Length: 242
Image 1 (cartoon, rainbow, N blue to C red):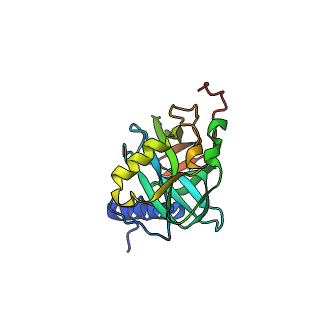
Image 2 (cartoon, helix red, strand yellow; image 1 turned 90 degrees about the horizontal axis):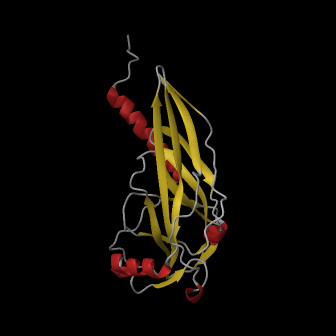
Image 3 (tube, one colour; image 1 turned 135 degrees about the vertical axis):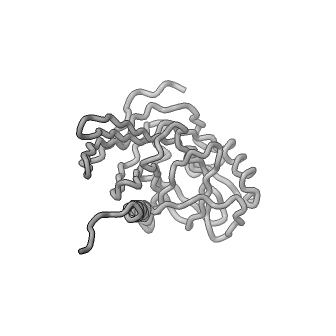
């Protein structure tokens, strides 16, 4: 008679398959290697996408970038890598940051919420055009993930929250860092993604009053998990004057 008992190795394989499925739905694009050589037919995007150091390891948090001409999209993962620059090559065209995305190795469902920004930073949620042979600064984005677990007699209550907590738009400083970290791309013309170089949006380098944009609560029972639908929220409090 065949046993129905699952081995630890099989469980691990199933978890990894679930995580791979989630990542496939997210369509993550990794940063180029620091030794990357320029490709004249491609456009380049650069900025920072960092995770707050004390953030939970799961779920992963991504920012989705959509090609407005083809509707294809890719996801940029927030990582705990201080000072690291994110650089990616894309097809020339028009792009827009459209959604925050959350995915977990323990949950195949990928959760999304439309990107919502305070008025002062609303330009970073607008479409921008990119041309071949140029590199465009798309800002420095900072995300956070919180996971709180309360244990009870027969179940555990898990609250997971993820979202943005700070955005910095500093074209000059980030462009200088790009040339230091990616010396082979030093000869490429750089531009702010939104506006001309001499009309770059004003630097905004302080924390903005975000609330969590993705939040969910789950009750974990022995052998199963019951979870509610993810919900989005953001702060509409008045920002302090510059």
